[in-house]
Image 1 (cartoon, rainbow, N blue to C red):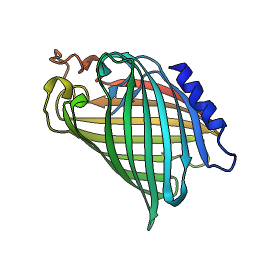
Image 2: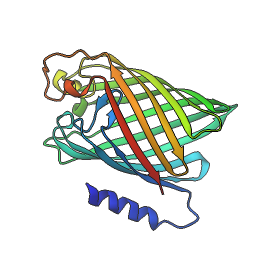
Image 3: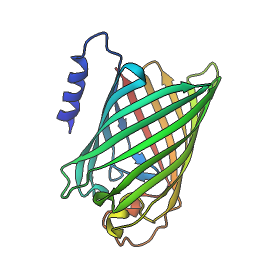
Length: 241
């Protein structure tokens, strides 16, 4: 996976100087998404890049080491290309995207795609928003999956500190209960988070608590991995380049 990340950053460096590019690397003690681990509860390095296009569009990609996570059938990494669109609307910012999740080293086909949109409003150092993410019915996730969430962040004036919070609900249809437990170990569930970030230039250090109402019990599905779906405190450090 580290060779893929290096290749991605080399490609970014080769872009024309006039291109609007954002890129960086990150290390998390545990990659948590919607309150559940995507890295078998282990440290996970990643790299990302995004190129802004005309008319509000952008192209991006993220590469993450998933550390053989059973949730993704033993995959050692995931590559996530994204086509995004952003627009300012009377004080609000609209973001929409289509993204794919392509897993490397998995024992079976774990790939799936999803669509999403978010609406954010900023007032001074504070920002609040809502988001929706939808993965249409696909065999890799045993049905469809809908995530609805709210999020907020407040920068503490005259300091490098920012406080973040979020809450969400995952639901969806079930065509294959074994596969559906991959993204929803307990069927419909709720997640929440509270974090703090220290931002100095391109360097961000963050500490975040995440939790879910997923019950602790025996797993019917080998993809559920409930032991990595409970409360967890995780740290991450990221560097933009």
